[in-house]
Image 1 (spheres, rainbow, N blue to C red):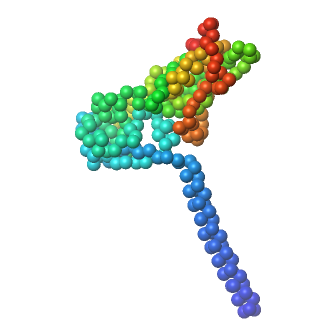
Image 2 (cartoon, rainbow, N blue to C red):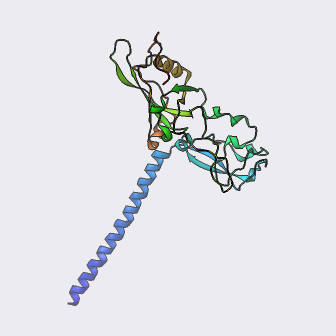
Image 3 (spheres, helix red, strand yellow):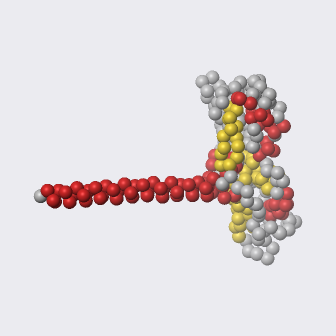
Length: 268
């Protein structure tokens, strides 16, 4: 009897040791997997600034008022406003605030009074321009779309020598304005902290996209061949990062399409 109990005790200890070893292995493998996923998903990081304290309009910034936070590049690309990045706190010393800024919130160029980078053109990468496309309000993505999102433009065309068909005109292009607005409407405050304006629009007729001058010319020619209103599909948030640092071009089948003598459908 004692021998059986002793055998069971040894067996239980063996199982316990095995379980502990397997547990350690699981933790090691899990951490290794997470590390690989982060390495694949994060890529390069960019530096952003946040106030260490809530500051009022008219205050001058001291270097000690700001702290640096690093975020993923694709996260910066998805920002819906002109957030400051790649700037050290010392570079903003003595700059005057144009409005109240909250502690811990990313600092934006339009928080800085009279700064040249208050212009919405800071949303455009160097060597690019904003190309305005007209859409029917019926085809707009509504509140699904934000400045900084990526979209796919689809259109029904009949290129010379080809049948009428729907084409993916350009894919993964960045949105820089919606309905003529380059940033979300102001969140001006009212007593009680209620929002003064809606942060997104439900309906709009224009979308600004970021393209190179060459792509703008190609798109302009393509638009003259449209037979129906443009359709706009919004790229999933998790898929946006694959377009970061990637050259966005029009569909090769349409890239050299000449302008049509007849006006395409540009407006609803």
